[in-house]
Length: 149
Length: 149
Length: 149
Length: 149
Image (cartoon, rainbow over all chains, first blue to last red; front, top):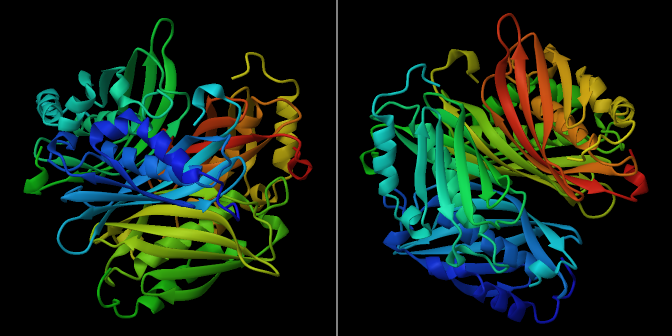
């Protein structure tokens, strides 16, 4: 990770997140942006469910990938952008809860490749329950106008 | 794979898919159900995009996971259900196109664990373009009322 | 994770590890067995290298998979066994060092499926360097004579 | 994939494979090198087994990663080299057989990132049996002396 956080990383992440129509569609909010860590929260909504009434694995993946990607944004310089190359998700418990918290953290920063890990939690009364984990591989993209920001 | 397709597999998949609110939310349609193979199609919609205006990786994952899961449904008996344990997605090209096709195929059937592979294509004028692949591990669940169907 | 460690888990892991010919071949030693955590260590050896002279990714995977599998063994009852269904490895830095440490930890215990995470470190003078991570999905197998232990 | 195979790709792969001490250690042979596809074969050997007497998952991973990496070599220019960033392996059947065949194929070529898929088969009397699959993400490295070739 860069020893010093790049300037304005929080504003850049916030602006970029606001442009993600898919995050608006599912009702996700950006709730924490720190150097190396980003959190997203999501209230349960029936429109986000799979056939058994639980949060769809694709919604879990969307929020985890977004949290991991923006965690990567917090450790790159202001001219660069992030592309997800690939990720793996383990679904550990049904997506059942009142709210969900998705945390992405940079495990290995780098000038070209960044590895981030994410965890998804269901939050109701009582302790948060781990429902899924992600490991994602991100590429630092530079000088590609179409994906700026 | 079972040598003979289980009876009514197509109806069961169609009914179960119709209960997936998240698939309605993104505008996905079930367009092909065969023994071992399921296809889902999706028109491009701005509400499904990430910050650069391409189809969000989470939407791609949602559709691929659904295609792979239902491919697994086509090779299990009528009393059983499918749970996705984990999947990995490789994002190969930006999700840019007029329509998207997601194909899930059973690679390894089994009485407990089924492995399925998926491919996502962007379709516009000209040949379809491979934009993502998935390998998913599914568990055959039996006797769990909450996840029947 | 089971609230109480299953009796004799350490002896069972040690006995089973001793039967792994592939671990002898690469010179790996079992150095820590605790409830939910297993560590394996390996000295660098030129016979374990890839074409650039670094530890081969397959050797890293072999040791990480073994550490994760035995971490899973420490949370199951004595009659059961563990089968690795799948794993993902991220290779973060070249496998360069005098010794290597592989730690496997149970992230999500379960009666059928266990998820474990592993980390590989290169150890020389100075602080250990993270070179790879693994997430593995294990199945708890019961009553299968051929894979007892 | 490059429209025309880069010159001498077969010789480069053969030379590089010969430098992989870990492949010698496990007794692997390079048996096929074509534009986009590489195959490796391995006779069963007790020294390669895990605790149940089957081929160790790490050995399967080592051979699959090597086949996938060299498949990627066949589509890059002579000055570049390949680094595996990450891979995922699904273990579908026990590694039981007289010989094993590992095939790596380029799914998505690229100037920076190449995605390759691999399949492992156990070969005895009768038809070959699929025992494992891999998806690997490779990076094309240029101008790094330490990893030339």
